[in-house]
Each structure stands twice: as C-alpha cells, then as structure tokens.
Amino acid sequence: MIELSADMAHDATRNHLDSMRSSLETITADAITYSVALPARVNVAALTVIPTRLG
Image (tube, rainbow, N blue to C red):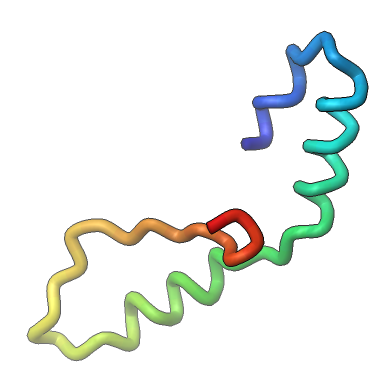
C-alpha cells in the first residue's frame, strides 16, 4: 500500500489514499503479539492482517 500512490496521476485518488493510510493504526505489533501467544501445539502457516476499516 505504501508504494501504490507514488505513481498515481489522479491527484484526488492519491490524496485520498494518503489520507486513508495516515488514519490507519499500526497493527503489526498486535499481529505479532497474537501469533507468539498461541500455544506451542498451534502452527500458524499464514497470518493475513486486514484493518477492520478495510475488511
């Protein structure tokens, strides 16, 4: 998502994406905390994190 707006020619869309990006909270730490708190018997093959504002 970070690189997406760099090449956009449409100013309004680029500005909207920049605004949306700045309003989202960083959720990486929450995802890491969740994945390491799982019991040892649980194997996480993939973890997809989607902010609730986008999901």
